[in-house]
Length: 205
Image 1: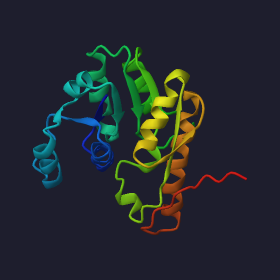
Image 2 (image 1 turned 30 degrees about the horizontal axis):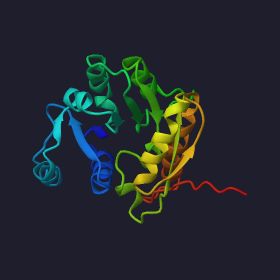
Image 3 (image 1 turned 90 degrees about the horizontal axis):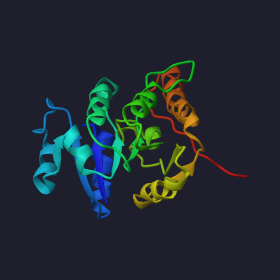
Image 4 (image 1 turned 60 degrees about the vertical axis):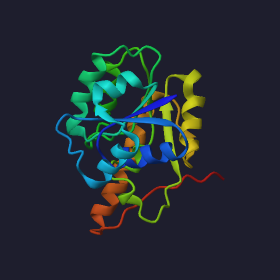
């Protein structure tokens, strides 16, 4: 099984390294003007020779994690449209800009660009600047949702493989609720006028 991680973000690099350390094959898809000379990315590419354009990464991979900045999501969606996606699994790890109507524009773009793929939402609670958003390493869980019930167990195992607790949040209609958690943490930090990051913990009673 090969993972494709799309986007040159901290989240992309961090998840990719975790999966490489777990023994999985990983390829990173980045935009054409991405600076691969950044020391960490340069080292990653030299060790694994795994950085390539979006479309190439999509073609090579069975499971795709989209971890890009919002500005580059349309470019990824265009690449998705050019590739045969039947049987591929796509995990949306992004957060759209805050929308009080709770409509996840990012997820909608991905669903429209990849109608034959199984789409999931997961890891978005980490944010694309992870692990900088969690310097103490306190985030131990992520929520995931999808309409692809048959494939959910594979995504659950994929999440758990790198040490996160995988919490099933139901159908894909709930993707905006997952993003709402992320945006609420940012609002709390902003209103407290602190540089600290806030996170939610799910507790069952």
